[in-house]
Length: 369
Image (tube, rainbow, N blue to C red; front, top):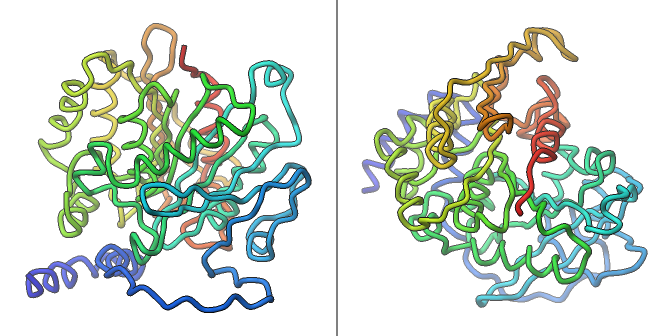
């Protein structure tokens, strides 16, 4: 098995240095448990494991968090959930701008899942999602994968048990439920999104809990329902799932005969060599099956924009009547990075349309009854 793995890595590494880093992350062994050491009084570094914080009426973020998150008018809260023998940290952004509708119904909530080699706070900064959440009146929740689960903080979207609702799924849903008990959230407007491994995980959580989430957003995400081990996952990232893609969507419908559908926005760079565009093609086909869509897409060309030709993209919109249920955004020159993000952090690109705003605009069209 070691010989085959080495051969596969050598063949895939030609895709470039960024692909190499991801391959190392995907096959890295879990770290050995460390002996406990006394905490130093100094603030933790930006890459240290986050410390759980007690909720405060006027929160003061820890130095590690402040280093990643620019000042904002809202509240930035850190906490954790202990369940299933584990403790998972998370951060929550509460906007200062509360829409009038939220005064009676509660705030809409967006759950954001980071990618490999990212922390929750880096993901918040890179996507600038809190900025748009403040403008549009959303609370944003950022769970963080445990290093003890994966050395590079990858969510295990390729794991068969996870795809069927196990693994980290109950932990993430548990964090959402905890937030629902502590804050005024509009339970008809809960959404989940992510990038790369986080996109794959967001899709899994949404498909296993379709009545909790009103819509899902996937940026550079792998197709659902295939992989089942690290080598298989690498194959999916490069080549998609083949016939398994349609079968996996039909299995969801068989397991949940009353599946209510799952509106989705899929964003993908056409220059992505890490999770190749074939994944978006197959995710779109899965979404058509899951939402019972048959009509042809309405195509919108965006050849120019904020970044000139670097902003060029195409939208494929699928409707049920007048309701937009699936938006497929293909961004011409984007590689494996969050479109319109903070390019000072890895896996974020300044060029391209603002993916955070695109997602919130799409989510604003949907709610669960």
